[in-house]
Amino acid sequence: MLSIGKEFANEMIAHSQEDDPNECCGILSGDDETIKKLYRITNSTPSPFRYQMDPQDFLNAMQDGDNNGWDMLAFYHSHTHSPAYPSQTDVRMALESWMLDVYYVLVSLENKDEPQIRAFHIDEEGEITEEEYQVV
Image (cartoon, rainbow, N blue to C red):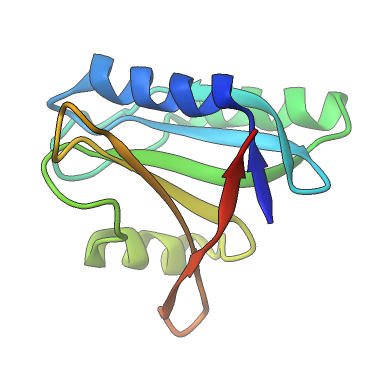
């Protein structure tokens, strides 16, 4: 089960709120399913409906994670006006990237007073499975 420190959960929510009305995105890295570092990644196509991770930010995060012996455990992004559930665009992007062995963590700002975080896996058939996670 994915273990997310409270500081990382709060940081994802803060990042989502700061970039609102556009979607934000980032990477969660660590080991043994425990998040050790959150990397904010610039959304290179700012939009309320999609995100595209900046290639240089992505590379920098991957190199830092490698240097620390961490695995990329999850991608996170926000949905500013819809539930924390992968959209058709999210599924298409996951399938096109072949990044199917990571969690997809979504932060919904649909209810601005009560942001919601949910985690999922997307398989090679495009099937979405909600995954349990814990905030510690």
